[in-house]
Length: 354
Image (tube, rainbow, N blue to C red; front, top):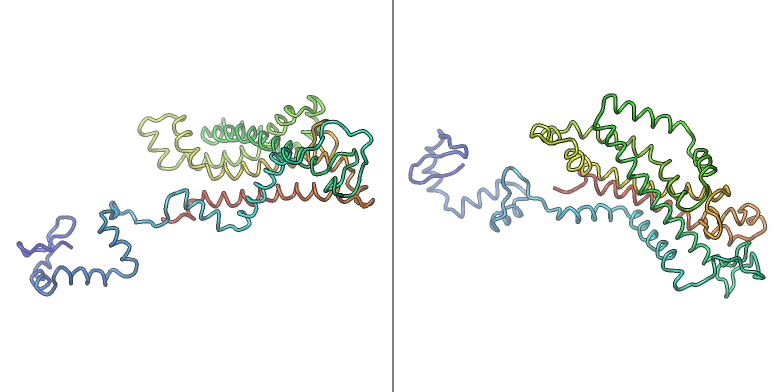
């Protein structure tokens, strides 16, 4: 209500006449401006102090907006991510493993390209070799760094191919809908019916074992799940009000996809990307363990375990050839899963403060 002293009428905020205007004299007589403000403050209930301070500072909310205290978008996302303690620990562990693999070789220099002739094989940890040597005489710490660098690189590049192809395929299928969607999804269903590992083995048997070829093969055989999830996102978002408004204003499909559907699908894409990296590393390790992965002198964590013949080495007591690399491998895979879950929560709009 707005009190008007001269006309002795009460005019409401919509400009209409209020029949209770006769009470104006009583209100204006009994309450000074300070008393009226105190009365309004008491009747507003809790939480009014912050709002009144903002109004005094000239930053009162307008248009029905609620004055939020959550800070910037990045701050809110960081707060949500930090609330997941396991994700914070996983991120720290992943950073340490990455530094170990990419920076460690500059400080801990070993030969990882040529099999050392005459060097002792499968030796226990010592001052010269802190984690011993493997069945070929390579220093285990240096070998883990070299293999980890390859595994992480292949995982990232293969995941990039997976996300690029899967996101594009899924968005096109979901946005177009109809026969286009049905045709594209039937192709995905056929590909999903083929066991992934067998498909990898068959393609590698034809095209070879080079690092570039393995990256491309893993990337192009892992996008089916990404495409299905992105198709579901596109099917939902294309019917939202903002997409319909763009169409009504003459906007084309490209603008709707690039400016509206993709930004609103970022939480799904980020989560899928972290899982794609882990899946690619797992696929490379599986190929290496089966002996059809990277060829010497390149190696990865799966190839290392296969080279040492894990079961035989454990039975012989050569634990340093199996457990350190296996633990490092598991740390990376588990960390990527926890980070993916936390990133999904960070991008979830409903968890942000208003």
